[in-house]
Length: 330
View 1 (tube, rainbow, N blue to C red):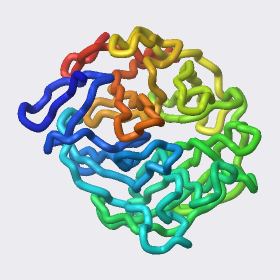
View 2: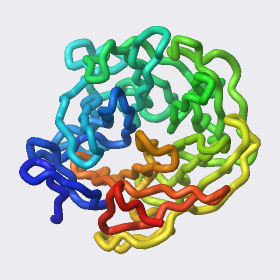
View 3: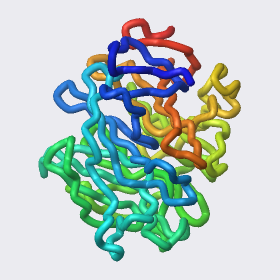
């Protein structure tokens, strides 16, 4: 298998869809993740998958963190939140499902707040919680705090993103269970709980999963996937003048083909959107993060990072075999 090595020879470009290794030459283990930037350093948080286990065998071991100053070369910062191997009654006891972690920094409380999809051990996918963990540092350790039910539903919510608006308000964007309507609701000032009712976002298609939201030139752009389990499907995108809508559908933002698996834009290159990274220092530069899921061996799942281009109300994510930030494709 081709690899994107960062241990011996520092990289100066992205090579999507191949094995990506850290400073120790080990495969990066941060799936379904997100990235924040603190004082010029990027921190990538993602699902830590356990070796030798399939998704059916509960492969989630917690949340892994990596750091980088250039987005190409990543240093292993270790497991910053582990599942609990001691207390079987813990919400995050080993055997739980812990997915799609994201982190925000709260300027008022001076805390880093981590969120993740949480299905406690033995409960399956019936009721979806949002798990919350807190740290004083971006590299942890994060301490599990609590869980909450989102979307105003007794069955909770599924895939989500946490979006901080220009005024500092944080919104929980998520797909509601069990009807799969797409909703958004505000979080409290400490970022720990929902602040009130959720609103179904007009214009967002039913069964929209894996949402990622950015604000650019006073427009809110949302990219998501359809709903087909671990199998790839067609991406979808939307735009609005307000965080809570109404939204207008823009269609599939992807174009091109992944030469490593021969999957084109109709299958999102074999991937699913996870997050959109705003590149520090240039308000017009964004990176779309995708995961190529391998549920039979999730630790071997791969990453696709591609430039996201915004032109007026048009959003495009074009495949590139190799690219870098200093020469972003037009």
